[in-house]
Amino acid sequence: MAFWKRFGVAMSETITTPRPVVVIDFGAQYAQLIARRVREAGVYSEIMPHTASVEEIAAKDPLALVLSGGPSSVYEEGSPALQPGILDMGLPVLGICYGFQVMARELGGVVGNTGLREYGATMAEVTPDLTPLFAGQPVSQTTWMSHGDQVQEAPPGFDVLATTEATAVAAFGSMERSLFGVQWHPEVKHSPYGQEVLDNFLHGIAGLDRSWNSDHVIAGQIDAIRDQVGDDLVICGLSGGVDSAVAAALVHQAIGDQLTCVFVDHGLLREGERRQVEEDFVSATGVRLVTLDVADQFVAALAGVSDPEEKRKIIGREFIRSFEQASTEVVEQAHVTGADVKFLVQGTLYPDVVESGGGSGTAVIKSHHNVGGLPEDMEFSLVEPLRTLFKDEVRAIGRQLGLPEEIVGRHPFPEPGLGIRIVGEVTTDRLNTLRAADAIVREEMTKAGLDEDIWQCPVVLLADVRSVGVQGDGRTYGHPIVLRPVSSEDAMTADWTRVPYDTLALISNRITNEVPEVNRVVLDVTSKPPGTIEWE
Image (cartoon, rainbow, N blue to C red; front, side, top):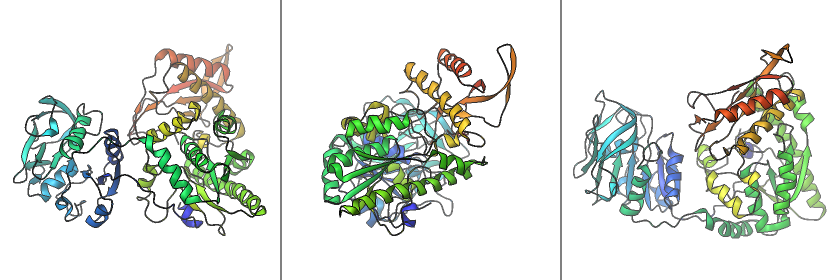
């Protein structure tokens, strides 16, 4: 749902950013990961869709281009194409997978289906001495492939830089034109020398400096926020998550008491999260906080509902109503003093921008991720200080701002909260059961030193399932608890985390002993795909 469009909220003003390396997205699963890897190489990056024209790309004043992978075949009618003139912009270009094949076809090479496919780990023979692209790398190296088409002939004037058993042209390049491409995915960690390939392209071929990091963001954003806001008042919907917390802390550092944060306790939070916001966050920042306690409202609205998508819609709706109430009170109080509340802080990250269509026009906000829904007679401009950043960069800034690690390092927790981790109807008793089990899991995972290894660990209550158990020499019918520990960099793909058996045993023992109505703990050992991270 386009909440900000519905309620007339304007986008924030464009804030000056460094010249980027533009990643052109051909529908890749890993476009965001490519952008992250470029930033890890010390170069600022942004993503643009493959439909962007030369003029639109040129308006970014890019330093270089990277063409992403994609699921299509370049020779099929209607497949994503490279916009005319992009390879003639005089910029260094690196094509990856589908982007590599698009380059080959555009430049006069031959791409086709030979009946051979390469998926997963694939040995490639590269030429480290021919160009800087593979400088300092072994001739034989493991690469991560995912393709059913091959570049059969390199474009005229281009050198073949790598081959595999199935692919005669696995990489090509032209130093004269600074145009290069590889069939594999250097952005994934499964390609051991992938980052080196990107580094060599960015620094050895494009000649770019390692000048980007998140350290300079704070000072620049503080100045930009002050310029944007002036003397007007600002509100922030604070969820307790790292994104809104860092955004609020950054804005507060810029404008102080001009900011009021609004926290909605909807009763679907994990144990201790309200305290983190009301005590830890406020203590660390000194921000003015208004808390709205509406747990009963949410539980009543969810009564009798088991369908997960319906739960999400209800939670989103109630969030809108709650924030309307709280924000209206803040605005009314401000008007008593003659001040105006003209701005709303949003913890939008760069992945949110990309997923919502690149940020042109009105922001599209996920109903379960961000608060929204402001009265129709109010118009706020958005303040989005994290709009150019990824999650790891946001965490780094949060630490620089002095936020407690309990907030900065917390695992992602979708806004529907425990509501979608109960398979079945949401009730107060079931929330209490799940909350207690979740607290045990988080405590023991932290004690075991696993917080850095686990992206998140949803704890799920199978509320509509009864399992037979024996407790106290008697037969019981309790609920199973599911543990879903996963490791991921971006949540687009994930693998289940190999938690030590001793830790799992301790967790199981504690939950079945300490949490009433639970007599069984199970472990989800499914990757993504095919399973999602959350149970619903």
